[in-house]
Structure formats: structure tokens, C-alpha cells
Amino acid sequence: MSDVFSNEAPDSAVRLAIERVKAEQSVSDLEGLELGTVIVNMGPQHPSTHGVLRLVVTLDGEVIRDVIPVIGYLHRCKEKLAERRTYFQYIPIPDRTEYVAGMNCEWGYVRTVEKLAGIPVTRRAEFIRVIMAELNRIASHLVAIGTFVADLAPLGTAMAFYTFRDRERILDLLEAASGARMMFNYFRFGGVRYDLPDGWVEKCREFLDYFPPKIVEYENLVNDNAIFLQRTLGKGVLTQEDVKEYAITGPNARASGVKHDLRRTRPYSVYPELDFEIPVGTHGDVYDRYQVRIAEMRESVKIVRQALDMLPKGPVQLGTLRPPYVITPPPGACYTAQENPRGEYGTYIVSDGSRYPYRLKYRDPCFVNLQVFPKLLKGVKIADAIAISGSMDLVLGGIDR
Amino acid sequence: MGIEIGAVKLTLDELGTRLQGEFGDDLVDLRVQEPDTLVARVDRHKLHAVAAKLKGLGEIAYDSCNFVAAVDYVTHLETVYHLYSYSTNTYIELHVEIDRNNAVCDTICDIYPAANWHEREAWDMMGVRFEGHPDLRRILLKDDWIGHPLRKDYVDLVENHPNV
Image (tube, rainbow over all chains, first blue to last red; front, side, top):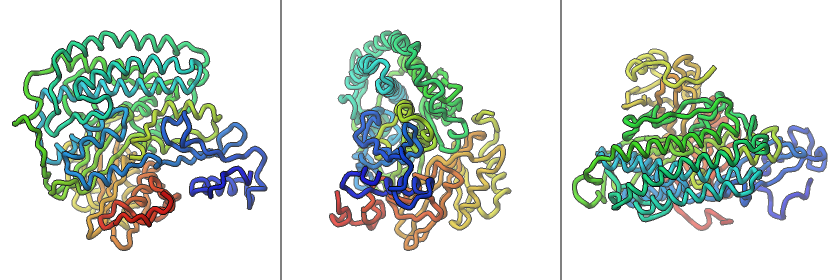
């Protein structure tokens, strides 16, 4: 037990894990530990954590006694960067926080600045934004489901191949509109950078016809799979109390039956005009979180279809063809939040009246959702921990910023 | 028992009057920020009591802590608490002024567990020491980092991050 660590000195998280074990077993040094207690670094380069998340796990045999998440391996100073860039120069940066849902993140930032500076958005642009955000939501859920089922191993990476195949079609659409697959830089204050290219709407409709049967395909693949059910039903239950206490949002909260969706509870853009359901689960286990994501993809398809039908003609930028490069919002602070694929993505900006944000703070859904891990994983088998963390759908770009 | 969102129908003004009645001078400059937020200033010594009371308000309780941010205004620091009430579907934003040279603030993570990591982040980036916090370690930067980078007077020196 004493020489499990590498030759590097243990960092604060490992020291904390050791202290907790010592306190629990009331021993003074590691030699006196009970047989079977072992502290393992899961990550930061572990395939199941979907990024550079590190969990310091205290194991008792196969059962997890304690978990200490360690984050920051992907920290790229996004909040500091904001203070040294003009509002306009900063637009591409939010893409890189929750990088599987770049459109949504950009929208969050742009909306906050618009609210702060009082910039109106053209109606056509609002619809284009909704379409892009919902397409990106589907793409993001496809990544979530594909990698999650791959972690569970009943089918190996088969599901991931199917979902990534279809995600690629969405990325093609997004690329056709914005010029990039993932790092879009598409939103502008008051609108979007480009109008939809010729034939884009038809291509998008084609995809909307193509996609729903594919969801059935995914369901056929795993929904009746005995191994899948055994590994998901009743595992990692998140109660409504947990949701409240830990401020969990997004599909993870809705799987527990909390009907919280900012598109409805704090409506923004043109969502009030669109007709869609908010899928909720009942048990809050791994299986429900998977089911809620599947149902949400269907709702997103519905939303995109309606938005395409309602898409008005007109400019996608107000006034001139050029977007406003230099804007100076009046002094003040503003927080806006919106429903990202993973939950409430908030941006808090303080302006001092200059061309640069004075302070910018993200409220990232994954950062908040990750906090419940020590509670959720205590007492479960280590193999289930993989399933549970996969079902929570973390993106480290957002957690570490 | 389930969480119903927006079950209690109250306008922001009604809610504001009710809170002002409950808290009196503890909520300073309580004002409405459309569409769904109340904003107030709180003395740093009263913060813990105010937060505890906000959570225990019964049917209009502010159940969850959305986020905690820290801002450096050069003359002073400020922590911003964003709390959410499921039953009324509204938010309250509390601003707490903190002395810059002796940046100490009470933790609220015993009341709102979700505040835990946000407070650690505020300590890491802004150097606000939260008294009573169970685990106030750096969260995004390495353990041996020197200084708090989001402070306005932070100078980025190689010596500040010895092992990077």
C-alpha cells in the first residue's frame, strides 16, 4: 500500500484521499491499512472519462469507497482571455468550451452581450440560430450516446459507429452554413455571419427525413440487449433531492423527473413560438438518462422542422452588411442562461463601458454536474462507475474552460 | 414528492415585497431585474444567515445555488451568488462586497453543496478565502501555483508556475 504511487510526490487530491482513508480506518500510517484498500488514479488519460478528467478513487476490493475528482488539465484561461480581447474578437472562444456543442455556447455568449448592449436580433437570424443550435444538440447527443454505449461494452464500438456516421451528416450541414465542422465562429451580435447557402434548406429537410428512422435503429441495437439493461437499470440513481442540492440541469435533471428546461422555464429567442415536449424520466438512473437523450433528439428534429417551415425572409444582420466590430456596452453586469445539450450554460459578463469585457464567468453545466460524482459513485462497483460517468455526459472543455 | 417548476404564481414585485418583509435591512437595494431575477446587496457578515433563511422559506424557497462568481473591482472584490427557486421559477442575485486586502467571506457550501466548487474556483482565480469551506484547494490551476490570475493586478511571471 505504501509504495503504490509513482516516484512523483502525491498531489493534494491524493493526499486528501489518504487522509480520509486514515481517518475512516483510524490508522496512523499507510502500512496499517486494511487489506484491499487501494487508491487509484483513474485518468487523466483514461478512455472512459472522455477527456482529461482524473478521478482519485479509493477502492475496497471492487467497491468504490471515495471519489475525488481532479480537474484543470484542459484549462485554457478562457475567462482571462476575455479581458484582453474586444467583445467581437472573443466570439470564437466560447466554441471551445463545450466543444461538442459549439453553436450553443457561442449563442450563450452572443446573447449575453446583446442583452448587455441592447442589440436587436433580426427575425430570420433568430430562426437560423434555433436551427443551428438544435442540429448541434442532436450532434452532441449522438456523441454522448455513442461513447456511452461503447463504454458499456455489450456491443463494443458498434453504436459509436452508427451515431458518428449520422453526426457527420449534421456536421456537414453546419459546415455548409458556417465554414467549419466544430469551431464555427458563426454567430454575430445582432445575427449570424452568413445567410444559409443555396439549397441548404432542402439538404436539411433531407436530413430530417433521414434521421428519425436511424433513431429507431439505435434503439433496436441496445434497448432489448440484456447486458445493456443489466448495466443501466437502477444504476447511478440521481434523486430529485440531489438535483436540487447540486443544481443539476439538463437531461441529467430531467431523467430524474425534474421538468426543468430553460427553453421553457426561462424562454428565449423564438422558442415560445415553437411546439415541442420536454421529455422526462422517472427513476433518474443510467437508463433514464439514455432514454431522455433519445427522446430529446426526436424533439429537436421536430423543432428544426418547424423552424424551417417558419423561416422568414429578410436580412441576417441588422443595418449594414458588416457586423458591428466595435461595441461598447454600458457599464453593468448581465447573466443569461440557456439550455445546452448538457444543461444550463450561463455567461455572466461585467462591463465597465470599454471595448473589452471587464469580467466574464461561465456557468458550465458539466462543471456543476460533476460535483455530484463523489455522492453518486460512493458504494458502487468500479465497472458501474464507468457506466454512470458515461451517462452523465461530461465534456472536459467546458469543465476546465 | 416532486419538484414542480413555477407552481407558486407570484410576480417579481410581489416576491420582492415579500422578501423585503422577511429580511428587512438584510437585503440592501432590493430591485427587480426583468424578466425573472431579483438583485440585492448583502453584508458579508450576514451572508450565511441570509442564504440559510432563503433556503428555508418554505413554498418560495430558493432551493439551489446556480453559480458563484467573484469579480475584482480594484477598490474591492465582490462575490455574486445566483440562487434559483424551482417553485416560483425565479432567481435571486446576491452581491457581497469583500475587502480586497483581507479577502475573506463565509462559505455557503454547507447550505448549498453546489457552491462548493464555485467557491474553490473563486479562491483559485480571485483569492477569496471562504471561511468554513471543507476543502478549499485550488481547482483549475496546479497546487503550487503562486498568485490568483484573475485579479486585475496579477502579473504573469515564470516564477508563478514553477512546475509547468
